[in-house]
Length: 193
Image (tube, rainbow, N blue to C red; front, side, top):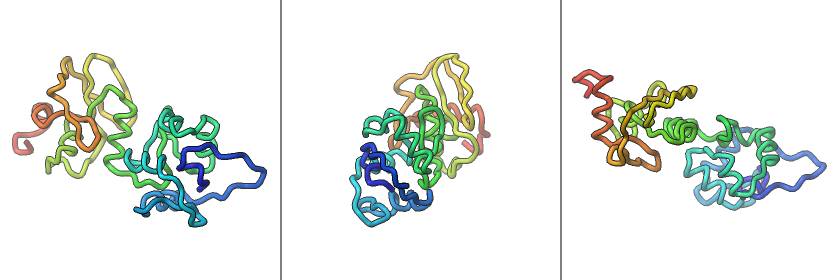
């Protein structure tokens, strides 16, 4: 991994080919070393962008990457070299980062910026036993009648979504426990609730 990648600094161009790691190695380097990620030669790299990926389930937006100094050209190079995987318009995952339920939920929330995790997904985040582990599509709720379609996401619409209906669990927006139970009552049996 080029040292400058996780430091968030654009890499200088050189005529010689760059070293490439497998996507598994990239994720292992970032995920397994609590003292800080190392490049293939064992040199310590700055943690700023690595910290971002770790805190955000391996995901970043183009804006996030730009904040760390990566230009659109650098992002394209990182994709071509296998360090970044495009997950949607201006959304990227760090290659090799484990794909988890949290990552799926965060990705859905990034795709639908006005959405909040709801129904079974909120039940999963809130620790309702019936909904762990998360199965199926991620469910989000949005206020209003806007008709959105997003792959692998079920979007529920509501006329009213007040601040008291929302909470945050480990940095992920979702409906409150009370709102989640009300939403689930339309989908689940009394026994499940």
